[in-house]
Structure formats: structure tokens, C-alpha cells
Image (tube, rainbow, N blue to C red; front, side):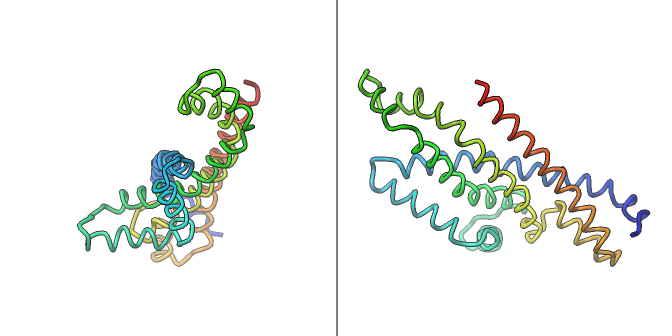
Length: 215
């Protein structure tokens, strides 16, 4: 174990870790927006919207995220979509995780007792008011754990953006292995930093879950 190498490269890996955190956070934000829209589409009374929502989930859950990134980044210019690696990574990861989160959100909403909806409608609430004031507040707690699991998966999946030249943890590790020929030390540093990021995300999810439990 070359500890001097670890000490020398560690500051550069910390810098790369911030890129991983940034791309994960932005992808998560985009994914949540996509997820709520897709979940709403799948639960809509409109048949075209339901078909769109189902097709979206099937497409993004049924194909590898890596292929989706390649299509967006390398194939995009053929149809006039030219994105920087970082932007392509955020959009690609966000669209992908949004499909998984949409099912988590939809499942949480469907888990709310149907009697709650019927009671709200019986006192004059519109469908939108029922969803906003009655169903979503109860479904929110049920969403926390599944969305937390997806957030952790997103952090680990962010390593895929190294394939389109985003200089995050995995890309940085690959670059240093090429110059040091010491994969054990280099990947070890990357693994520790990934574990720290995942631990923090998991703790945040736990805190949010406990806060909702108390409320």
C-alpha cells in the first residue's frame, strides 16, 4: 500500500468528489421534477397521457443508463442537440432516475386509503384539491424511503458519466491509474469517497424520515 501516493492524490480526488456531488444533486432535482410529471401522467384520466407515462417508464427502465447517455451525448449532435459532457450527464441521469422515482411516487399515492379520497370529494373538494390537501401529505412519508434508495443508486450510478469525459471520481481514478499503475490505491481512495457521500445521503434520508414520523 503506497500511502505517499494516496496522500499526494487525495486533494485531487476531493475536488472530483465535489463534481460527483454536484452532478448527483442536479440529476436528483431534475429526476424529481420528471418523476412527478410522469407519475401524474400515468394517473391521468387522459388516455394519451397514460400511454406516454407508461412508455416513458418502459423506455428508461428497460434500457441501460449507459446507452441512454451515449445516445444523448454522442447521438444528440445528429439531431441538433449539442451538449457539454456535464450537461449531458445531468440530463441523462435525471431522465433515467426520473422513471424509477415516478413508480415510487405513484406507488405511494396509490397506497393512501381510497376512503380518504372519497371523503374529501364528498365534502366538495375538487380532484386537484383532494390530491394536494389530502392524498399527497399522507403519501409524502411513504415516498421518503423509496426516493432515498433511488438517490443512493443515483450517486453510485453517476460513475457512468466518466464514459462521456465528465471529470468526476471515477474518471479521475482512471486517469491516475494510467499514470501510476496502482489501481488498488487509486480505486481505494475513490471507493472511500463514494462511501462517504452515500453515507451522508443515507443519513439525510433517515433524518427526513424521522421528522415525518414525529410530525
